[in-house]
Image (cartoon, rainbow, N blue to C red; front, side):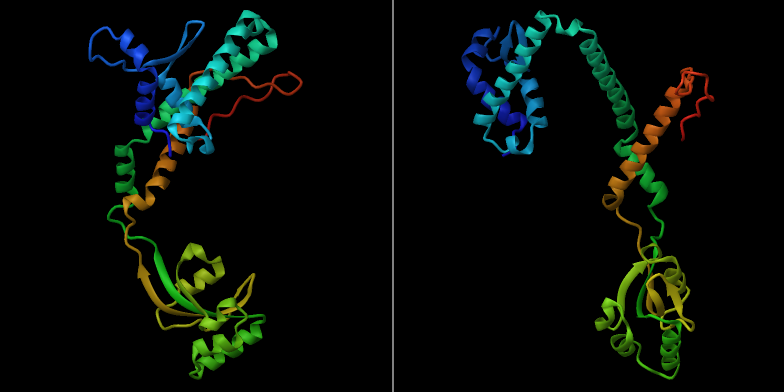
Length: 287
């Protein structure tokens, strides 16, 4: 069972009810974020435990709330106790430790800034607008339904085409002569878009009309093909739900690049060579 905010709150209320009631200034007034523990006066709030639950490994999240809650509280107490003792011993003043702490703080700030920029760009309205621009009321990709016969040599492919020219059945020839794994199904490939096949095969297949087959062999890295197209169609525009993840990723990528470009434009950048001598000017961030 995943630990939800409600289940944690209910459990916390049961565990700390006496203290909470004693600290409540007025009857019936609930604490919005109860204090579930303190370490040297430092408060550990319910929201801290909720956040720890969300970040916990999946195995821990499967624990019953009655077991998980005290475990997470104990872990937070241990972390705060270590923090207090480390500061008492002035470990944070050691140069290497101070530098590592500063670096961690910088990374957190960078991530927070980028996350804000990305979040503001990837909104439901932005996703809908991108969908309307690139997908809505536009036809989807063209597809063909085809069969093929794959052989090792051009001469074999030409002999097959000659048989087709004299009325031979394509599926029967595929079952008899093709070395492709799909030969037993008469060389059936089903429906596919142009980008799903190697270029030489796709170009030849999409140049045909339904009922036509290639009059000259088509070579690819797999061998020599004879292709029969049995149908053509255009896919409808995809529903928003089918492309939403792709749109969100595109918007996020664009936001990252524009944020980096804007940040670079606001600062002065100089890049030196590995030996410290002056190097070439920094290139602007790609958009």
